[in-house]
Length: 142
Image 1 (cartoon, rainbow, N blue to C red):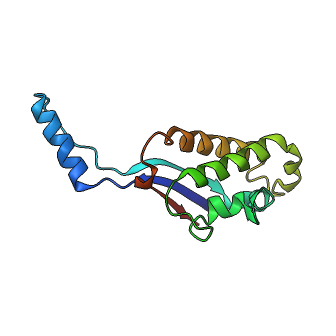
Image 2: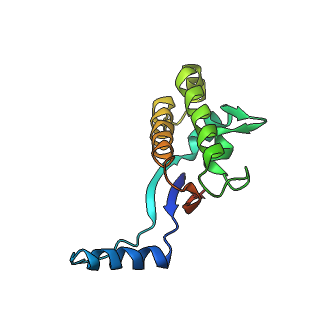
């Protein structure tokens, strides 16, 4: 079993139509128009949930809450607060290798895998900071 964490962009019909109009105005022939809303999607084993639950980010919220259950933690959209909290979690994981003690006994996942996952996610979120993040939705499928 695993967590499937996805960031999607809520593309509006007007945005797609404007893209087509702009292409036509510039004499660009479109073979297709991108409508897949997925911006980023990864999965990670549930075995690392215990490790994530040991990473505090703010007032009783852990990295586990942000990744596995963002809606219950109050986040359905990417926004400054969410990005900042994930970064706090990433910095904690990066500077606390003693989290290795939560490596799963069955060998499915480990501290290095978790660190890479959170690093990639943090990088993605920061790449979205310059955009209207209200159009980016967080989907956690557990």
